[in-house]
Length: 533
Image (cartoon, one colour):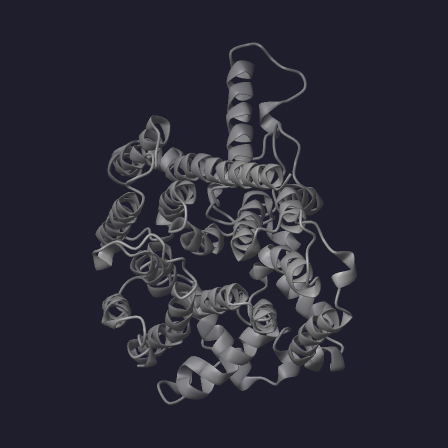
């Protein structure tokens, strides 16, 4: 495969890392796969057997097509290879169809598409500052970054066990980031525009791209104090960027515009009726909010039954279905105000704005862009509507690039990664996968911490006592959720408790990492301003 021969100029170690993780992915082929496996099989069938005019209307299966058009075309292309493996998988009416050949095709299609991710990682490694180069290979920032990206635990279990096609999509994102680092702005903009029409979740980081390109590409010069030289504005560059975005969008959405189907496409892409939280609670602000509502409602019920009957709430009126049931549904909070999509949008914009202002007024080059991108991803994850727990990878992967540059960023990365990765554990709930996810998580976490500690050994410790205590707490939490709770009487009455504990505990860590990164960005911007003055 091409992934094994792209190590030119980087060393044989990169080829070995790429080969090693590919072999691991092959070993994971027989493991459990989620309903996403059937989702993508159904999309293969839809795009192969139906005309384009029916793609976003077809609803035989509950797993309707809800990705942008480029991904639909990607499924269409895959389907023409899939027919040589098993023609039956391409029948729209074969719901929940599975066969050994279907399994092999879908698993290997994910592995093959990861070639783009491997190439993107190699390009990102070229952008890493080589000042902190150790004598040993394993102490080199490029080597550490390659392992952190290629062997990323979250990406491995989400794509190659749970089943999705995130690898090549993150490959597009990392490649666009690399191009911006290399000052190839038009290529970076093109790649990101294409990415948005593959999966619209990347809209989370679009503000960082838009502001950075406008500030650092369309304005060609700065004043000595770092502020904008307004006369340096280039209309040609703005028009060029606009043309790139327009052409990519026209290619993607044009056919559906011609069919007068854009409203239907957008209704599939943005299904606000799905509710505030996903089936598995993402460890964000709303997980803490929902947990608080749950605790308050239980307290009020207990107080009511103790005889202190509060007139403003009758326990008989408390909804029986709760956010902790794991169902994807709209839900009215019991005690706290219910949250609307508009409220989450406002919260997200407020959370993003400070990082955008820093990028505009104190850009600090590509590294500043990358920190803003990570904050946009984290802020959207923290406050967005119906956020998937897997969306944490959108912050973890770009944060990997920052982690090998500064000790402060390494500390934030380790807290975010360890917490974010553990929050993915509920995705793999079957017994055979339990030792696999624990082992892979331990190996990746131990390597991440030890390698970054070695890289920054001359600086202050990466964790303080509080952070260390919090991270070590994940061990007892896992023992409680996986090995103790199933044998208690609460399993039947309160089946949601493990998910609740995992989401809330991890939400604390993710929130802390988000806040710590924000403080770091704001302080760095203030220091930069002081130095220039």
